[in-house]
Amino acid sequence: MIVYRNLIGGELRPAADGRTLDSVNPATGETWARIPRSGPAEAEAAVAAARAALPRWAAMPALGRARYLRQVADLFTRHADELARLETTDNGRVLRDTLHRDLPGMAFLWQLAAGQVLDAVKGDTVLLGPDALGLTRREPYGVVACVIPWNSPVSTFSAKAAFALAAGNTVVVKPAEQASASVLRLAELLAEVFPPGVLNIVAGLGEEVGEALVGHRGVQKVSLTGSTETALRITRTAGVKPMTFELGGKSPVIVFDDADLDRAVDGVTVNSIYTGNAGQVCVAGSRILIHRPIWAELIQRIAERAGKLVLGEPLDLATEMGPIVSREQYRRVVSYLELAEAEGAERVFGGRYGAAVVEALPGGYWVEPALYTTTDNGLRICQEEIFGPVAVALPFDTEAEAVRLANDSRYGLAAGVWTRDLGRAHRMIRDLEAGTVWVNTHRQMPPGLPFGGVKDSGYGHDAMIEYTREKAAIIQI
Image 1 (tube, rainbow, N blue to C red):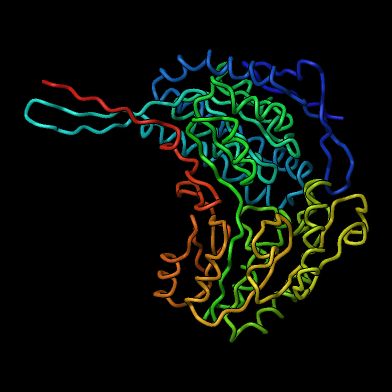
Image 2: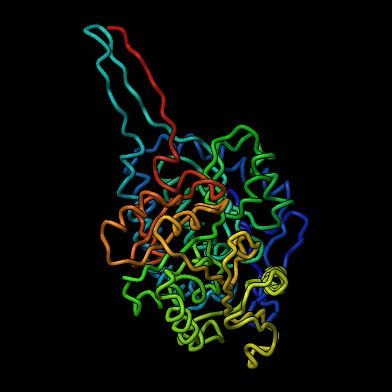
């Protein structure tokens, strides 16, 4: 049984009262590790350590901070395989995703942040008149609290911490209690990289350590990737603080009759909703809007492709889809399968759950890929984020109707469009209410491009500019 510890002030520490939480392998349902069940005392200690380290870290020349970030990039190069396997064991995201999609980009992301450190200190000058000069300077906020989710903990940790640290902030990270192991292993590695207190990591329940952290008066900014409901709780707890929220989604994927259907079929199954993390992705294309002339053909081809998906042991590189992350989330997804039937949606395929789905792993939290069809976008399965391998397809007749259906949602994180018509592609990019629009692809989030949502999907994004504040000065000559 592996027992992980928090990183506070450069030291690896258990929770002060010795309490732990079980880390469960969702493929088997068995406990394989334990993490600290931290509380207000650990939040207080981590913030105190971050505040103590802040003056020296913020005053360090930007290129000095860049040298530390490059050490982290080297660390990711050396330990990518280990971290990928830990994350797969902890949250069920298949190894072909963690090893070949998520972790390889982390070394580049930390190098990118290192290369952008001068942007964090770059200001403007404005000639206000012959005898007056205006200037701006960018400054770090101070202590930044980063709350990260369970579906991609290492990559989300990196997206937040790398740019916050590059900008001169010190950081306290709270990983999700469902999947903290890979980030706590990172804590062990990073304890040897940063000066004490610059980066701190505390694990535990949101209502115990998370709320104490974000509500702490010593925290100057909060960055969350998580659910809209969690963002609302943080807003009530944290008060008036700058915040970055990357939240939930109910992303539409729109397939027009001129699309390359061979590519579109993979786009709406393999790359969008079913594989990788079993639909537990904020940008999952859970609403498939299909042009009526190709409705029957595309539904049939999606069913055929989904029927060939390989479910099973997530650490096997042949496996395309793993389990649901936890018993709680499993029950939530199953409740939506039952709701779909109750709402009168027509089931095309899937819908089984439990031990029969993957007989070799009967204790895991398994749900089959499922597709339902309807003409009523008002159904709850069309409007609410399920966060599982459950999609719903709706037909449309015109481009305007496709836009109306796509935008008929409280969410606006991402959208996908499949078409060969360049003019139509640009109109859809313009008209869709989403932070990111993919055309003839899906789920690409390269470092260097902003990623964030609109409406209930949040605001802001993890970038250097988000982790500095601007101060103005006027000099009378």
